[in-house]
Image 1 (cartoon, rainbow, N blue to C red):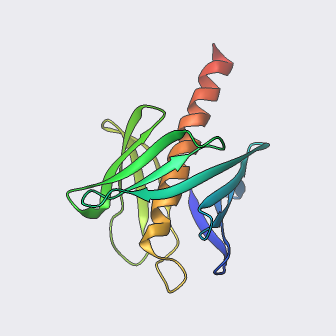
Image 2 (image 1 turned 180 degrees about the horizontal axis):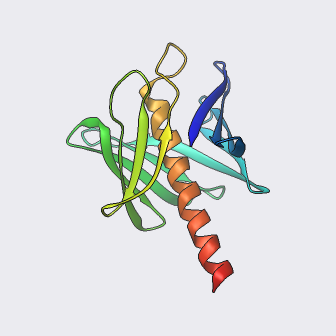
Length: 152
């Protein structure tokens, strides 16, 4: 999987998640209002994203109704690894440094997915990685849940 940065303007940042040659998810982020609009699998959602905490900073994801559905926290003040709690399930992530960052998402010791992230530049900072990791985790968690329901 690979995140692509389509548009990076001050008012709006657009990202797409691709798997080989198939677009899986489209994400529009509005930093001024803290809203995320995404479309995936014929489903459109709006999320609110914000920062909380002073000493232990975390990124919080809320649904359309303002109910907290997830949060991302850093491990020991390191921004390249941490925990994601989504729908009361715990995930961990790692962002190895380097020229082409590749994020890995884990549940326990099982690696669920790895995705390439856009390189950090003037338009893309590490805070954008937080929202990309939260949405990737949301996508993986909801996709797995749908497949289990379909097979049951």
